[in-house]
Image: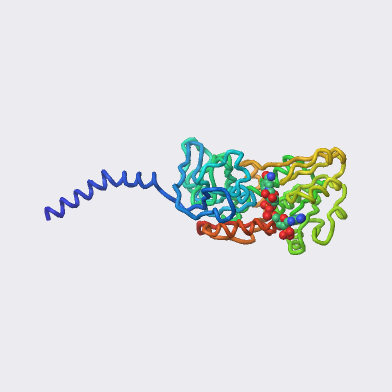
Length: 344
Ligand SMILES: NC(=O)c1ccc[n+]([C@@H]2O[C@H](COP(=O)([O-])OP(=O)(O)OC[C@H]3O[C@@H](n4cnc5c(N)ncnc54)[C@H](OP(=O)(O)O)[C@@H]3O)[C@@H](O)[C@H]2O)c1
């Protein structure tokens, strides 16, 4: 009896004195699953590993990631294309799009609290989204659209912001104008068509035969199968071209824009002398995180003015397969990594 009480006391003392320290030690060394690269290279450098869970700084939120969108740029970062821009700290977690639940917030955060559903575009400086937890500055996240699942919300940030910043911020697209959207069935294109229609513009969009139905479902006025028809035979005197294809498609686009119009390119810098020859403007866009714009996009989604197309999901451990599919250049809508079950 005496011994038993003594042991109980010791257990209680241990619990009181030591267990919190164990807990603290555990949180300091908590790990999570993530897709990490230790060097630049092909899809084979993607490793599914345990890494330390990030801690939010005062101006950051820690998000439990439920879904992470996969973008062509993820593969470009993996291959080292942007190594010169200073992102070279290995191990590096890839992934720029996330949807999830706020786990914890830094002490300067005012807009979010634990438990809030959010989506965000994580810039390269903040770390990556192919992970069970991610940290983002408050200004890069917005409330998740209520009408979307987390998988759908994870498909939105980068491509929708790109389409918004191209058409609304850069081209200043207005009602009644005509826009030609190349690659209308892809991630950026599928949002661009719907943003342009919500703006009251007329949309001409290109895709292959397999995606003509999708172009129409998204609201395209004139759908062009680029494998059978030259877009320049259909689109003439447009106000805006949004080009996510480049090369020959960009070269042939100068002639379809009316004087004073604009080409917004996502993949190449428009040629200055071609622009001058046609009396048009050209911009090479680089998308930026923007929580205000993300919230406006979320509002259009909840108003059913924008649909989100997710064609395939993969578990986190199969990020390599997901990136290989995206690298095909023929994704319909978006591909998303699903990291956890949808919270109730
Ligand atoms: N600068 C930036 O800030 C920025 C931001 C986002 C994206 N991007 C870039 O923009 C590009 C597109 O991104 P994304 O996420 O939309 O890619 P994505 O989802 O892979 O889109 C590919 C789409 O392009 C279509 N396509 C392929 N070849 C085409 C052609 N010759 N003419 C017309 N459509 C064609 C495909 O349709 P079919 O299968 O029917 O051919 C497919 O639906 C990528 O290179 C990406 O890196 C740049």
